[in-house]
Length: 456
Image (tube, rainbow, N blue to C red; front, side, top):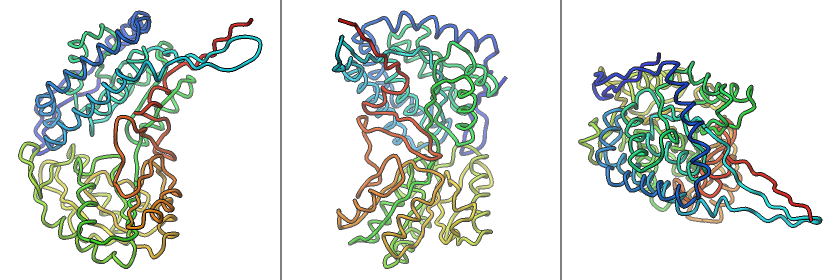
């Protein structure tokens, strides 16, 4: 059985452990989800919407308590976690308010009869969710799919057991029937069994490339639909600016969100040579000024630990490998003696084509690259295994748009780090995965687009 535990990332202290599910409990979870599907999917959209609206209200009404639960598990700053929970409620509200419209029948002009395309639920789904956004990642899977009439078996990250249980409790408080949403503390081996079970109709995973490849292979063997939201090394291109210090501060602040542990963070800063030196110098000063703190004592100029000691040690090893390959670690990257702290780092001159150049630094690390032309910026940006998001900044909007048009990413942004909202699709290309969440297309993944034809 897998070990689920709450470990304080600031100290490494194990606060509470949870026993993993037995094989029988896993089977019971699948059976409950399958049994609930017929009744849940048969209900009108208004019934499902009412319960999702209640769930959103409960998230908002309990945001502080829920945030504290998750902060103790993975160390995120309290206000960031509260904002995440409120955004999660917005997502669920969005699908409750618009889901029936998104899933409406589409008339298909034809001869010899009447044809419509219907959007029908598939059945029980498996969600495999990460620790870095423990409510948001769940909400963007739950919102569209429960509204459609699918049911869900949810396997959360091993370090977030309390968050996982609280979300399940809230679904029950919202009046969502038993079996419609089931949390299970499954092991990796049991996840494979769930994927293989004929009752499970689709799988959504947010996580690492390695996990995504494994899940995609297992699902592919059973010919099941998969949505994957994986890693990213998003390019953040600065073509010019009237204020280098302000541009550096925006880039640094963006990179520090969730202590750098976001798949669509601005991991690669690509800067024109005429402002590069000043930009790097500003980043270095910003990083030097940072000091460690804990999730409940955050203020400007502080940073929180990474999610675990293992994550911190792994990041430090990545920095060592980059330096060994020829990179210049300008500041930071210091690993704390205990806990999971890595001081904010600025690293430059990672050799293009080296293994570290293609790596994803999942923590407070600003990679900076110097370019001399728009063409070079585009080439460098697209020289990546990933293709999640990207941003381009310039005082000349047309110039920025021309560069953004050429980015090989799922989300291209101009003069903003990222366009975000419940109505905006999220997803990438290349090894960042496939499928989309959020927006109207979030309801187009785990759905049977059925042709319904009646002859004259």
